[in-house]
Each structure stands twice: as C-alpha cells, then as structure tokens.
Length: 474
Ligand code: ADP
Image 1: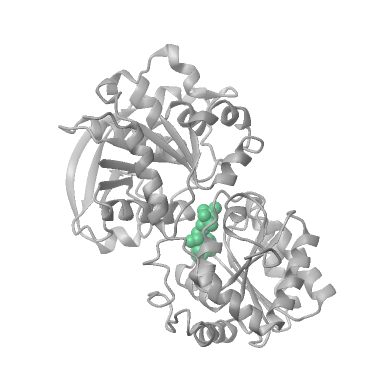
Image 2: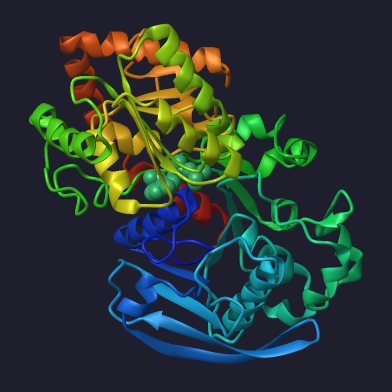
C-alpha cells in the first residue's frame, strides 16, 4: 500500500507534543511492515531543516482565495527517518520558527492543505490512501470529495486520526473563499455551529475516523469541546487504536540523550545515576522520591492544580519528596510554579520551556511521573516513563485509563486516581511516598513496568487492517 500521512508535526523534524511522536513513528513501522508510507508536512524553519539535505521534487502555482503563490515540495534525500519525508515550502507563510501560535494560522494551514492536495493531484498515479492527522489537515477529506478542482481524487479513501479534539481550527465564514470552489450543496459538510470547523468537517467527510485510545473515543461522546453530538452520530465509523511508542528512540539501553544506560536488570543503579545528575543540577535531595511532571502547562493536563497540590503535599505529608517540573504554557500557571521556588528546601525545582534531552533524563532519573490530566486522548508520557522504570501517577481518563492499572488492583503497577482535584493528587503523592518506602515492592513494580509492551507493532497492524478494509480490491 502507498499511504500519505499529512500532519503539522513529525518528530524529529518538528514536535510540540504527542502528535509529533506518533507521526514520526507510525510511518516508520508501516514501512518496516512492507508498505510505502510518506509524510507531508509544512516546511518550518527548524534545526532539522538546516542540518539535512533536500531535493526539490515539485514546484506549483496555486491560490488561497485571491492570493496566488508559488509553493515548493522538497524531499529529504537520505530517507534517514525510515520513510519518505516531504516538506511544503510556502515562502513567508510556513517557514517560521514556531509550529503554531500565529495570528494567521488559519491561512497557513489552509494554504498548506491546498498545496498538498494540488501536488497529489499532479501525480501520474494515485496513492492508495490519505491519512490526515488532527485539524491542521482536517479540510483535506472535504476538499478531495467536494472541491471541483480535485474531482479526479474523489475515490481515494481518507482516514482521520484525532490526537486531540480540544483544538478544532474554527474559522469564520469570511474565510470560506480560501477553500477551492466546492459543490455548494455540500456546505454543511464544512460547518459546525455556524463556523467552518475543520475537525468536524474531517469527522464528517473522512471514510474512517480513529482516536488514539478506546476510552478517549467513549469519552468524546460526552466531552468533545462541542462536538459530542457529532461523535454520537458518527460512532459507526469511529474506532480507537492505542498509540504505540517508538521503542528505538525510547530505550533506556540506547537512549542518545542519556549517558547512563540501563536494562531491566540494572535499572536500580542506572536510574540512580540519572537521578543524581538531576538532583545536582536542580538542587534536590537524592534520598527522597523524585516526582516529575513533563508537559504543557495547560488546563487539559491539570497543570493548574499542581501548585496547590505541591504546597498541600509539603504541608500535609511533610517534606518527604522532591518535585521537578518541565513544561511551558499558561502564564499564570508558569508564574505560580515559578513562585514555588521560594518555598523550596532542596525539594522543588522547575524548568520552564521545551527541552527534549532534559525530558529523557527525567524519564530515566525520576521515581514517579505525575499526570493529573483532565483530558488525555492517549498520553505518551506514562508509556515512556514505564519503559524507563518510572511509576506513573495518573488520573483515570482516556489513554491513561487504558494503560495504567493501580498497584492496589490485581496485576497493577501504577497509581490511579479518579478526579482532577487537588485532594486526589495529594493523596496519590502520599501513596507514592509510601510505595517508595517499600523497596522490594517498588523493585518488583519497576521490573514489571519495564517489561510492558507498548510497541507499535500491534497498533500498526490495526491501522493496516483498517486501510485494507477501505481500499478497493484491484
Ligand atoms: P500532548 O497532549 O502534549 O501531545 P502527549 O502525552 O501525547 O501529550 O505527548 C507529549 C510529548 O511531548 C512527550 O514526548 C513529552 O515528553 C513531550 N513534551 C511535552 N512537553 C515537553 C517539554 N516541555 N520538553 C520536552 N518534551 C516535552
């Protein structure tokens, strides 16, 4: 099969979160399974772009409404990622340092999608399937089906994967002229609650929709940032496929970001060495359990609850643990977490920003990882953490529910709580401190979680079966 993935992120080219990790791994494993998987994404001004060699494979001339422009498609020359990587260059619009967060993101991602479809329409053959990821590629299923310009592509099956339904790419109807002329009877396929909603449109128009865990799919029917009724209506074409993790990148025996490698058998010593580095760097006490948080400091992740949960833990449990935070996000959460530094007695620190290598060191050196998410479509952090022998403390939601069993339950190995509230987090921190005191039990759990299989192989097969069910037999 020839599969085209369209995404705004792809590790290691450009990553803001889990979407990047998944689009950097899934095509690689599809290629290993004998298929041709290609990734198309915007050409941002990234380190990866500067450090690699590229060839121009296509130049085109197209329009976003009345603005006509030249775009270029470039391909990474050496296939070093294990799949074909293509970048779309639109001068001045996409070649910027950040992935998201510009006032003209609607223009940027709409123009990107038009270029992708224009380019595919110029091919001499058709790919077997187009797989779009999240709202940034969400207009493509509509364009292929209903824009006159792309009529010859109508029969190509499309699959949408929802990595996060909180972000939908809403656009006012004043921007509708950006989209190439379509069959006006089909305007409803773009619309949700009086706006153009690219994510809703993709749910309506894609042949199949997947979410990145089973529980998240169930949850979307009652909590989907306004799209609940749509998920209920379209449930027949939706399936949950749990993300895997790239076990080649995330492996404590070979991880390129850490110096002290370790295996299941040497995890105690190996983890301790990384913990020592962290404790020295962030002025923390080595003897205490190290609880970390890695992620976006936003409401979805429950980050706003963390400052008070840390304060309460120190107050009610005592200063028996260290906390280390890595992330950035809402300014008021950053401000409160930054403010906690003044209370630290060598047991709290924070790094505000994005830092890939520090995150790897934290997965390796931490004893526990805290994820008090309100919404967690899949969650990769808990899976990475477990591969590094770090015990997850998670809220019972989405992919966290599907991957973590409480150690109090049969066969369990993590700490799970029900409500995204400070009290539940503090109680879980207390349980973590207790567990840390039971050395033998903790060793058993570490060995158990390092052996759990979250590799991509199973999930890749589920995607391939899904594709196969859509592709007409030739
Ligand atoms: P998200 O909802 O943010 O996509 P996921 O759990 O699916 O959450 O994926 C998060 C990914 O982003 C993980 O690889 C995690 O290590 C990484 N990450 C998040 N924030 C940071 C940060 N500040 N520095 C380094 N890596 C980060």
